[in-house]
Length: 124
Image 1 (cartoon, rainbow, N blue to C red):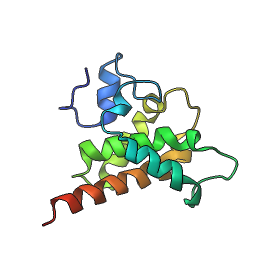
Image 2 (tube, rainbow, N blue to C red):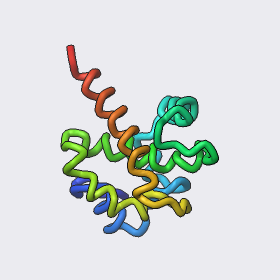
Image 3 (cartoon, rainbow, N blue to C red):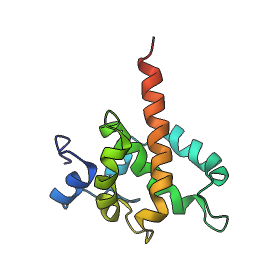
């Protein structure tokens, strides 16, 4: 079971070999809703960081990782958590061979979407 008292998603994955944050594991599903998957599937191709020859499935782990991380760390600025997320990417990406540099913009995009959504759900 994931320890949500840890400071980062990377720490959770590193301290628990039973946690799989990749595309086939359970960690990514904790805060990944069908609406998020549908949104990114429909909109990923229009994002400036996406390469035309890459499918949605290539970017999906980064969208999931960004959304999940924002749910747990969105109260902290991206600039503070990015280094932790970069360290956790290898565990979070599952079977993908993508690097953090290739995926950080997708993760940030999903992070921003969740933070924006959560901010607006708290605003009267």
